[in-house]
Amino acid sequence: MTTSADPNELGAFLKARRADLDPRQFGFDDGFRRKVAGLRREEVAQLAAISVDYYTRLEQGRVQASAAVLATLARALRLDGDQQSYLYAVAGKSDSRPRRRRRPQQPRPAMRRLLAQLTSTPAIVLGKRMDVLAWNPSAAALYLDFDTVPATERNYVRLVFTHPVLRGLHAEWEHDARDAVAALRMAAAADPDDPELARLVGELSLQDENFRTWWAERRVNSASYGTKQYRHALVGDLTLDCDTWTAPDGSGQRLMVLTAEPGSPSDDALRILSSWTGPAAESTKTGPRR
Image (tube, rainbow, N blue to C red; front, side):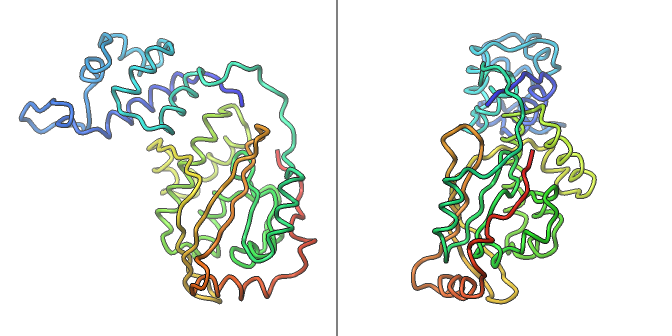
């Protein structure tokens, strides 16, 4: 994937991260209540062994950071793996390859074959900005009939926020929705000039206050596994393990699979749902996504 520097986003991300930190953990406790949460600029500069003026200009987008400075800032701000990846991406340091022409997204043939073989396990192929590219009948039975959603609106994050069925399915909606926003933020770092991504973020920011707030927090997350709690209208509560595998070709496509503990009530519920599904031949019908 290609990236380009975004000084304004870099500065905003640094500011958001230092606001998250407790000054007492770094030995900065002056005994007075601070007006603004987190570390001050001069404290970050001290931890990173750079001048306050340089760090201030970095946050203001008036200077570009070198890879060495990014490394010391990552240590100073105690960034985790995802946050470091995002830091380098918005600074334009994560990928030096030339930008390629955009092509419509299509599910990889191997992904389609996997979907056809997963008959009783819900599975979805997600595109680079979490577009729903393909799904199997079990996924339609668990989530919704994606064929009823226009291809241009068939995006997992959009549906989590705007579709009443999918939103109501998540028993821990706020937790899952925040994770989805953080994952979308990672996608934005990989391709900040993507016009479709900009449109998606703009529309959701206008439609949903929670999305607007969580997007501004600049949390990032590329977790490939976790547990989901669902409340299905027909089979009741389900506890499912959610695992994703990234395609090795750099397309950004991921296969998301949901499974249940064998013999558990959730496993029984999935079997019931899969018994109601139609032929697998219709499972990946979808138009191309850009």
